[in-house]
Image (cartoon, one colour):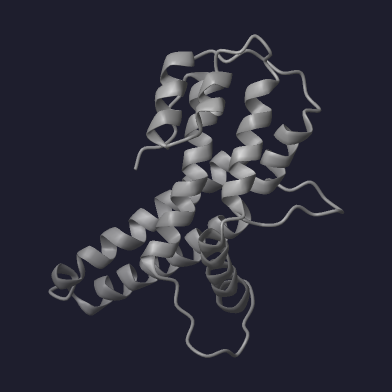
Length: 190
C-alpha cells in the first residue's frame, strides 16, 4: 500500500524539480509554453504533497489506512504468518548502509521468521518518532491541509526541498529494505 504513494511522491518531486532547473530555458519559450510548464509544476507540487501526506497519515480507528505507521504497527503486532527472508546478503548490506542496529542485521539470519519483522518495526517506529522527522511531517501536513486539500486563508506556506527529500528518503528506506528482504527487489531508485 505504501509503495504506490512513495512512487507518486518521488515521480512528482522529480517533475517539479526538473522543471525548476529548466526555468532559464523556459523563459526563452512562448508564453503559452511557459504557462503549460507552470501548470505542470504546480500539479506536480500538489501531487507530491498529497502523496507524502498519505504516507505519513495517522492510522484511522474507523478505516484501514495505507500509511507507514499502519504498516509498521501491522509488523509489530505480528498478526500474520511470518515468511523467511529470501535475500539475506543484500538485505544485510542495505541494513548496514542505512546504519541499522546490529541486532536487526543479525535477525536476517534467524531461524525465527517472526523476529526480523518485529525488530524492523520497533526500530523504524522509534525513528518515526524522531523530533526532527516529526517537525518535517508537521510542515508537510500543514502545506497539505491548509494549501492543497483545503482552501484556508493562511500566511505564506512553504515546504522546502530538504523537508520533502528527507520524508521521501525515510519512506523509501523502509520500502527498499523490506522489498529487498522479501521480494529481492530494489524499489529505491533515487
